[in-house]
Length: 236
Image 1: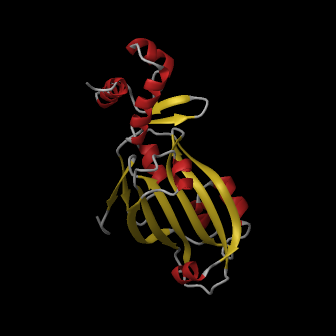
Image 2 (image 1 turned 90 degrees about the vertical axis):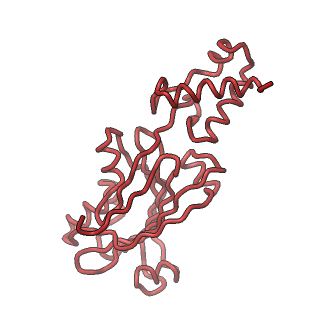
Image 3 (image 1 turned 45 degrees about the vertical axis):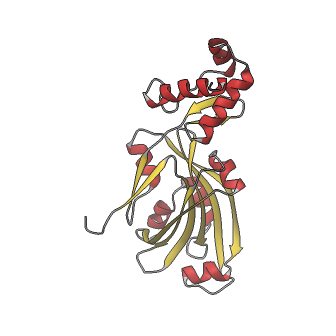
C-alpha cells in the first residue's frame, strides 16, 4: 500500500507535467491539499519536499511554493549572454548583487588572466534571475585597472559588456569555456534555491577585449534542472 504522501506527490507532479500548473504559478497551500485529500499538513509537506528535491517546485519563505521554470536552452558562443536568452523567451531577467570587493589576484587567477600574483581585481558575486527564480550564481574576477570606478559602474548598469563598449575597450568576447558537474556547496544550494542532492553545472570562462587583453574570468554555478547548454561553432 503506497504511503499517503506519495498519493499527493503523484497528483501534483502529474498536474505540473501535463501543464495544469504552469511554470511560475503558485502550488496550492498545504492546508488546501490536506483538506482535499483528507491527510495531515505534514503529509502534504512531505510530498512537497519530494517535489522540491526533483526540482519541480521551489519554496520561498513567507510566500509559499511555486512551479519551477524548466528546460531553457542557453546557446553559448563568443558574445552570447544568458539574460538575453531569458528575455527572448519572455522571462523577465534581473541581476542581484550578492557581494563586490577589490582583491589581489591569487596565483591561480593571475595565471588565468596572464597577470602577476597580487594584481588588483574586482571580485563580483551575482545571481541571475528569471521571473525572480535564481538560475545562475556567478563569481567574476575583473581587472580593476582597466575601468575607472568599475564597482560603481557595474552596480549602475549590471553589464560588463556595455561598460567595456562605453569605455572604448570594444567587444567583450568569451574565449574559453569549460564545463563540469558536481553537487552544489551549501551556499550555492541556498542562493540558487536548488536541492543539495541535485548536480549543478559549473562553467569556467574567460573574456577578452579588442586589444587582446583578458578582462575577466568567471565561475558560474548553474541550476542544471533549469538550464541546458548548447555550444555553437564559430562562423555558424
